[in-house]
Length: 238
Image 1 (tube, helix red, strand yellow):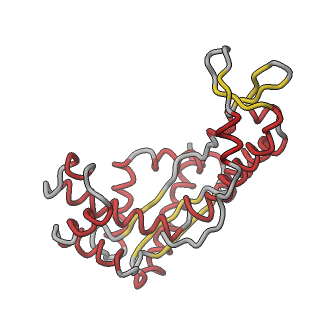
Image 2 (cartoon, one colour):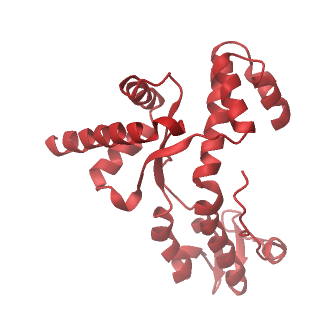
């Protein structure tokens, strides 16, 4: 969503044309001589997370459209069978004719009046148990919905206009890329120190955010900080 990134230019032709199929478990593998191209792909993927995949503006826009769509489905205005056949443009135009919440949300999206970050915290800022607790909440839509409703009530904001975004625990599946070295098939992370170092670096890209309307940003931030401080206290009492 208009993040202006220039990352992602890699030697994809070399990777695609040098992939082999080994007899061992039918695994798709790369020759060791192509490890540099594979490393460049991993670096590009790593850099894409803060600049595109996890960019705060992109996620604000994405969450706004998701919530508008979910509300239309819940109100029986949109069927999932219809949704999967729509283009992005068709979906946005459809939502403009739905319930008031969905309509207002997509209108703000189109006009680029996006929700803003009121509160955020990163992987390194959280203690292990607090991090586990937050990840647990993120994996439970009902718990996250209750927290959003509580924040809305506390801040006197209409339901749905505070969005908590908790990504799952970060993992790089590409670190399982297979490389042939001396006739043996190994994961790239076992061969390349560069690839191995990306695993810890990748976790620094994780960030939990709470989005809201710009005019209530400060109040939501203060209430959110208090809410997550209570989570910390609960964990210390366990």
